[in-house]
Each structure stands twice: as structure tokens, then as C-alpha cells.
Length: 162
Image (tube, rainbow, N blue to C red):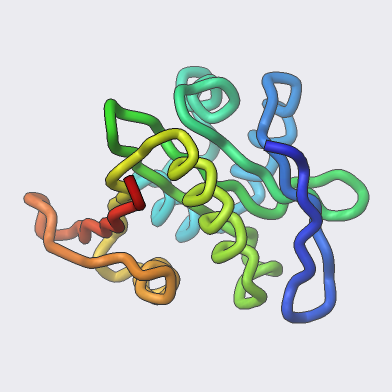
């Protein structure tokens, strides 16, 4: 997937592109800079940083990881999907100062486009039930919701064209 420039609603612009192994340090710095609440909502645990295994999955796992880079080179948004046989599970997190301007929507839209092109039929994710921002984003992008086996979680799914 080639890099894309994304103009946000507030007039700022970012460049989004797939994450590479050499981006690991910047991805880790992004995660460290997130608020404790944002890290918990994204990773479902009170982490301070990614473990080496988690970082490896972000930068080179099966599927696609995208980062949004602000001018000057720091990451301000991260979205990824992990690829299964005909399904993909996604996650997205945007830095607090960059929220509410369409960045999460643009990144997930890029993931949806890429996954559809790879033959993914079901695109889904899991969020903490109280994560209002994620519920609103998923609803805006046409995801259906259902409860997970874990009562604290909410599943989101969208069928992609075959």
C-alpha cells in the first residue's frame, strides 16, 4: 500500500503508510506517550509500553499495520489488522491531541480497503464496552455489534464484498 496524505477536519495533515521494522522505536515511543486510559482501551491491559513480542507483531505480523506520521516524523495514530483465513481482526488508537478530526476513520478505512483487496470476508474487532469513541467510529463505518463471551467486551463486525 503506497503512502497517503490525509487532511484532517481541523486542517492538519498527516502521512499514513505501512509500518516497517525500522519504525519499531517510533511505534514504541507513540505507545509510551499515550495516556494510561488509551493504552488500556487499545491493549486491554495497563501497559506502559509494548513487550518485544507485541512490538514485533505490530511491525511485522500477518496482515497490515499503518501509522499516521505528523510533519516532523512522530507517530500520531496506529491501526492494524491481524489476518486469519478469511477474516481479519482490527484495532486502532489515535494520540489524544489528534482525536475528533477523522484520523481513526481514515486509518480504518484504509485497512478495510486493503483487507477487501486481500479477499477478507469478515472484518472485525473487539473493544471494551465502555469505549464510546470506538463504538461511534465502528457505527459510522457500518459495523454491527454483539456482546462478547467476556461481558466487558463488545464485538464489532463488518462483512466485506467477496
